[in-house]
Image 1 (cartoon, rainbow, N blue to C red):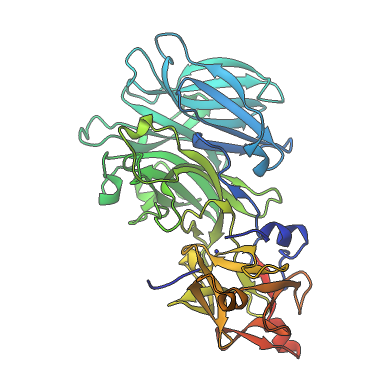
Image 2 (image 1 turned 135 degrees about the horizontal axis):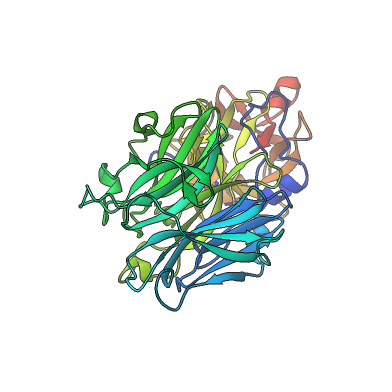
Length: 479
């Protein structure tokens, strides 16, 4: 095992107490820690969240019966987990829109609500995209009318429509079977729109399943979602069968490019988000993006399962569930999704107060302070109730649950808990306001009072601290 690094109980405390506020010199991409608990919704796949100007988050998703479109709303993302659910539309008894009601998305465009969804008919596999239009301030009580099938230019298996605006032009993205590629199931297409249910340009294919990881079980590119930042458009999509092989790929284009030109899009050659056995998260995919309540963090909303093996057709397994996860940003301006984090509290990263581009991370079990940690999970820890109790906290690795940050000979390592009192003491800390900045956080050793977790020479130690430099070395900011 090469590396180890976040379970969180006190992340919420960090936020509520103000300890997650950014310190001086924070990089522009830095944002306070979030305190969500996963999963958000059981048996809800293909989740889409819209944060509206009315202060509410709206969540819709595929239900296991594939027979209706549901909505729930709350003023927080976590609140969606307990929000009541309203059915706003039910499948037809026969004909079009009578089967396989899949992947609804809700958008607010020009003063009205629109839901894009896929449905079959008497031939349940004649899947096509459809549009609902809602009039009213609250989509749960709006008046909904069917705008009919969204015509893409030809008839074939098609689904997962989404829309976005770039440089004043509205675009539609969707997945559809290319009749010229009989072995392929779906490719990704883009077109401009004249209104929320009508295309104004010919469809252009911008991605087909050509890489090995896109063709496991089925040859699939589907579920496009758009994240617009740093002068670029990042388009995530799902690939392969909807079991543990399901994963996310990504296309990237300049915001100033001709988005209807396939050459404007560059495909990542490896998945950007995939199953992780250590965290017991399998088949992550079909995501959407929103922002945190304070507007400072991009949040990915997606589904996965908590187990790998499925009996029978994955489409008949109801247990995909909705989860949320903070998106971090690399120094080059690209998003870093990391790995699907464990169920429970969201992990944090700890950024140095006086080296504001560097984070606590683990490498070969050794705790270090390093900048540009692109292996994100190495720098993510969950703040949990201290192993030694007595009002302490412990820092548990995200990508190696059950491993904790502990001191040994006053040097910091990430090691598996062995249940002994010495280990528990070495892995427990008193969480204090930042020694150099009360908006930050410092960690005092539970079994060596007066000694604090601090960086020195790019390594982590537990030492007594005095003087301006040492106090800054022992202060961190939660992100």
